[in-house]
Amino acid sequence: MKLLEGKIAIVTGAARGIGEAIAVKLAEHGANIAFTYVSDSSAERAAVLESKLRDLGVNAKAWKSNAGDFAQCESFVNEVMKEFGTVDVCVNNAGISKDNLLLRMTPEQWDDVMDINLKSVFNMTKQVIRPMMKAKKGSIVNMSSIIGIRGNAGQSSYAASKAGIIGFTKSVALELGSRNIRCNAIAPGFIETDMTHYLKEGAAAEEFLKKIPLGRFGKGEEIANTTLFLASDMSSYITGQVLSACGGLNI
View 1 (cartoon, rainbow, N blue to C red):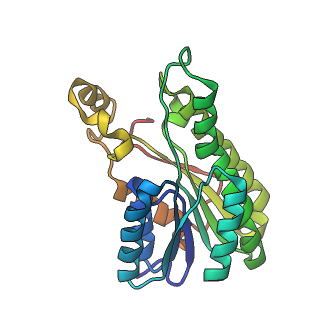
View 2: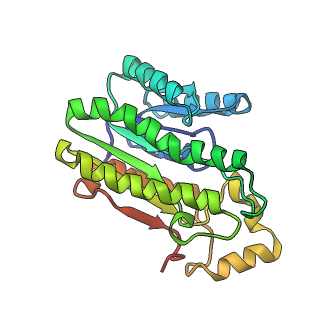
């Protein structure tokens, strides 16, 4: 059974990693996909993903768009509306990390993380709630992090941005629940991606694994499965929640 047959889903930051896994998973379940990438270096990967999604029998299109820029988000969603007609699901996945001790962190590093991780969620949600309110339905899934719940030394900007997503998610759920629009967050733990490759090396990996009850790093597909659940009617009575997919790290 395809859980999202004929639905229109937006996924930001989908050219690689968790975003790519999410786009594929939603497409496998029948969703037409509009996704973004931000850099010229990702254009080729985005084109490959677009083709892969279409091979799954759905409509798919990639846009170069910076989720941290309000005007670009407005233009992007307007184009999605012209191309697809509506938006049923929005997955706010775009994110970066610029880890540094607070003593050494520059204002520019802080602002970059806030713009891409937190402001982007405002930018995109602001745009997609209009068609969702018109349709009186929709699911917004925001990618937070276990670091936004428990913090981590050297990641104050990343933790703050991801914690902010949680507060935003709960507030939006309260505002839009009466319109049958749900808003939830996922808090992944340590997932095997390009962003976390350094965690798998040597003694550092062993230390991280000791803290995870399941004794391993997560996979992108496992976060994609969690996203599918929250995007679909399988979670029709769930809103304003933070679902930790962290192997037990947050116990």
